[in-house]
Length: 276
Image (cartoon, rainbow, N blue to C red; front, top):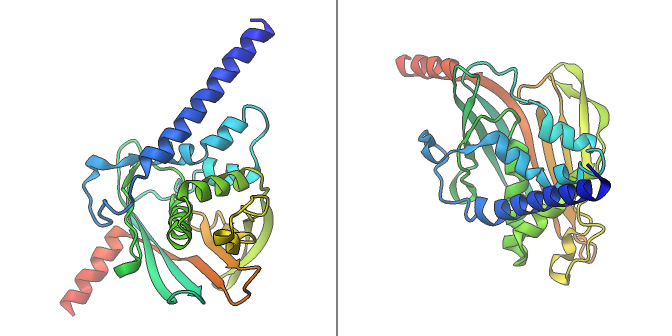
């Protein structure tokens, strides 16, 4: 095959990737409020691995030209849920500290409802409660922990709500920033021990020309901390923003791992509580 044919084939492949990501952004998230967090009906479930790949598809497209960043590998390639071999729930605490809106603390739960004979996982989500609740569709077949995508998706939609901007823009900038970020080896304290971890830190809007209404996000930073010793690998996700023109305009959101319980243990604990 001559060089011209190779280039034509590569351009067609790149265009296909562009079509996929465009379709995903416009169709996959028309509304995140139409699904039930507690619904175990998987008739409308999405393919977890396909979704994770599409979230990273712009970066996978770039991977045809250059190597993927280590941050991409950690988030989009590593099988975070591989060691979880029975239905379980992973618990996280979500904290919002803001000078603009009410502060609150809530719970986020990833519920691995079942694991079939092919080791395929069926997952539902409970992301906060009350007026802060966000509904996400269930997933089937996820190998990676989807919690980081849920955090970024909620964050992008929150920025849209507060600025009137477009969530697609914010989501795109986050993906591009991850694609250009390398992982840093660190240590974290977990319980009574110190364990090895990896940190992904990026500021997605610094190189972007932002309108006045979204200038508060110019220096917005994100931090993801992962540790293989933790079920689901993801230990903490943080976002922090402070308006450069108004130092009193501060928002910090944190999602941190709390633990894991098998669904069997949860049922047994509930039964004991009822009996007592």
